[in-house]
Image (cartoon, rainbow, N blue to C red):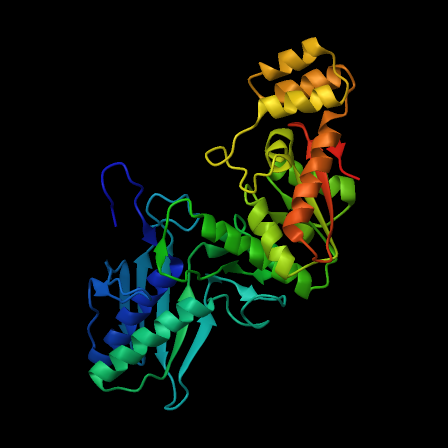
Length: 360
């Protein structure tokens, strides 16, 4: 999956690895031999091959394991072992999925899986079902098996994911719609934002807060007295969160972040990453002028290197620049939400977590 020189290397999702492991185990059940490497077909037609990390065969069962390679993506499951143990099931029973050690179980509504189901998402399930159906046809054997997916150490890995907040208990989720991990994928993060909103709605939460990072999250929780389940780790993707809320509203939404990032939102940017939007120092200087700052301070702000430097200048004169930015950011957010019945407030924090400004 290495691209041209200088490009980031793509990797494989947990769903693709689980499909490869399950395919190898099913082939061993049918023939007595494990294919190594094992080749699978992904939803878009790619046919990657995976080396087996482990393979074991017993009476009526087979187990195969793959080491996940996430490429150059900082995925918490990179290097994890994804194992599939298949057990023959009664004829006509079809394929049944089980959560082994390190794979979570759904305990809250709002996810695309029912409460009590193993956290093996629909797309990976379809991939495994298609792979086993094809192998059953090739070897002329029934496709009736129980598939148990396990990830050694998955419960610890899950602590670094959204799973605890989403009510997925006991381990990680088996994920991936295409089978391919795109390094630093925006779509993966936005998918997590959407699932967080879905669970909040399904569990009756009326107030959630999208946060740009850990500092703003902890500060907002303290300020508002909300639990962790109400916090949405939106990162830089405030636009993705707001657009989803426009179609799936909750009663009250907070936006919490640092002064620099939320000054970008106030200027109309919906992606707050430094590669895709910049702080407009000239605009912040103009805001200071509108607040009555003397010309010398406005000129100094226009030459500033950072947004935090401008905030410090404003606060040295007791000018409510952060509050003005919060109010402007709220107007931008409300425009994105349109007529959705969502009340919005914006909270601007400094690097220490102190509330610097808040919209009405």
